[in-house]
Length: 385
Image 1 (cartoon, helix red, strand yellow):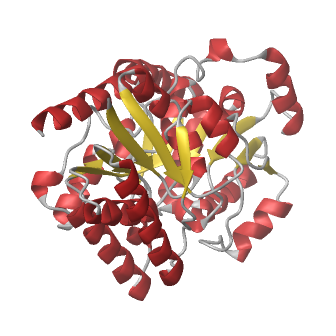
Image 2 (image 1 turned 60 degrees about the vertical axis):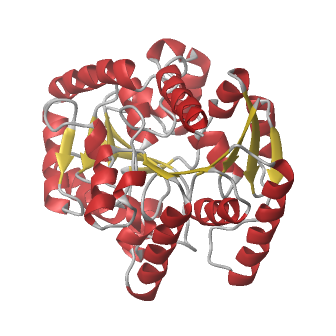
């Protein structure tokens, strides 16, 4: 039985971004071992995936001494386990995982790129992050961007040798669980609780944003556009499902003030049941500045929740303008406002786009399809050895 080690920096990525994938591989002929730092999600991850987990105390921040220690711990772990494949995700998990795997002589080293942090940074931090991406790519045998547009970006900026690059299937790191993200799976009692939480009023028009409340997710321009829209359409509401991450990429003080004080903004906080908010929302707005292949768009599409999103890598692999949603140029507040105004005036057209997107997701991104394609590629790599 081939041994497969999957690495992410933190367990939340195993729990959310790769949910069900390790169990699938474990049930289809692989001995799977998960690796990440410690975290509150670990018990859930172990129970859901049914696989062994090993803790390496990695952090998302740059901690040179701590990172060297983690590199050594990973190297020793790989030498002991002798995996056939090491497959890493997330920037730090990828860098340390691919370095250690190469040092330990692991023959099949795979790294999935699900976005590039450096795109929205400047100066020294940008140079360091670019170096990390290139070093990760050099140590990996195979680099799998999780969208075709991201692959083109990597090619254009010469981050990875072309022969190593490949997109599995139609993209996405994990696909979407259509048994969960479906209107027929909604539990009425939970939906009523969500309505109560956001003080739902059927006469209002609800925009929804799901994700970290940080600058890079486009929160500043979203809030500015919403406030301007509210002046002429006081029945609109903006529901924010997410949490502040002030240490990494804080929103502006103006945006924070609007979130806390504007009568049309509803701060719902973090939730692991976003499908209930999508069931109630008229439109999901995703104005992010950078993505790999955003799960939130797959989730909204599966829930037949209309989408407005920025024109960036990842987003454009899911949404086609005026066919499956609306797209505006990234960071362009005027265009975002215009698309939000259009959505309020033309809800039936937006719903038609959403229905077409649901069909597209069923054909290409249903989780069993994505898992089977990944499993097939693993077997091909093993056979080539």
